[in-house]
Length: 348
Image (cartoon, rainbow, N blue to C red; front, top):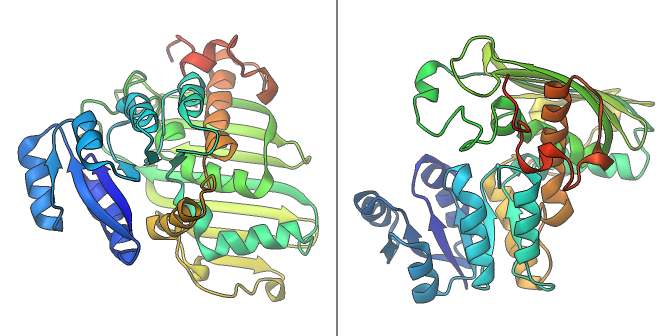
């Protein structure tokens, strides 16, 4: 049995991580939970039949020696908590964003061992059967050359959402909808089209009284030659997550909100689109592959370079938006100001 601990016992732990772990009960067992709020961790353990609750991460790691930690805490705490787990020899599955800048991500990967433990990021949209089928069709050339893409995250978050103290701030959330919302659709796009080379962007704070943006737009060029437009918004009353890929032989589209099934995908011409199964995008879908990797002693999906891809694109978008200049992915090294802070020390 793989021994699992959950750190952070808020809504995402209960609604997404607990169901995913229950689906893998034959090979994964939750042995502990951690939260700085003693009453909350007690309630969480009681509700979900978890034998031990802790307020301190280090104490839990020493006492329980888990194999895997599910990290469900606010973003500003991630880098310290992830590296603490890795240095204790424990792999981590961390909610997005895994950290607040590329410098922090590189500190995380530096704490990994050559053969583990590893840190992977929750990007569940890569793992639904529709996305897996699309990548197979791209890899075998069925759809032809990728040419044009659209990546839209048009969501709505009211002021009450931002009344949570750590939201809407560069130092605690890392960014606005680009970082905290659209990152899921952007990651799925990257899993299909690969690494980008150049980005031009704009970002603005149009309505929400926060430090970060509430809308951003970008144009992206990929290494393979394809070009994409990207929109991230928390001001959109009719909410939708939309991806469109135009290939030389077909157009593939996905319309959903927070998760998809096969019925949410379409293809023109339709005869090219015949997925073998219907697995929804979910924490359960990603966790199954993560546990497979742990059992084989392999690097899990969406770790290392794959886990860095979306954060690179977010960094490039912010750098282009703040400076008004095109940004190349190759330039985002330690010398670049946006490598260390996603707003580069600037204000909107």
